[in-house]
Image (cartoon, rainbow over all chains, first blue to last red; front, side, top):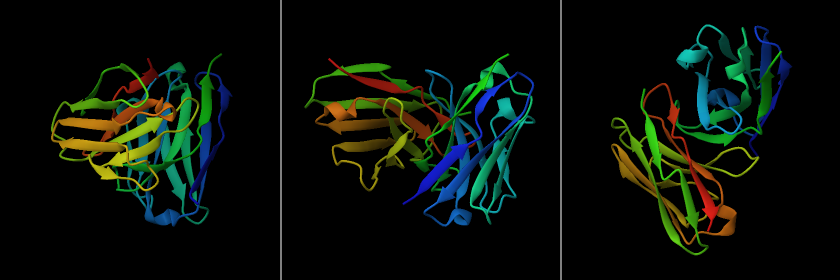
Length: 119
Length: 107
């Protein structure tokens, strides 16, 4: 059974940093592109970043470039999202997602982790 | 960026109805269009991929069609458990983008 379990969220002050983790199991993690998708309270889904199977290629939405860093550890089956210079507009539930088609569709999602940016 | 416009924003339905939800892309995405269902307080779930391909474990009442810029998600015989928000998403080009969603509610 595929499982994606996020952790690391919480209440953070503007300008501070946070690192999210996603522990993957139930599939050959190193074979799949992985991604982070977020959802602000009462809003829709927004792709944040994707990372290639080996981690050498990363892609971001414009609004997070330079502040977010996606990475992965294939030995630990874990995906990460380092978030720096947090802004109020980063407040959202962050989902880890398995990308089946390679920068295309997300066939499995984690339960999500809430990040709240507030002073 | 590819903009996906979903309509209607909200759809009131009666159980048993056949309904169609629309997703229109600002430019062609071929068939790289996927549909998700998100129930309240749950994570999204992939319903249909590549416009019309079914997903294992998804009830057969869900189907998809379209290509290029116009896509449709159909539910043949809505059930109470289908009350959710439905999102389309394009996987044709980065940045990956989602539509704003269609909320299905009971009439």
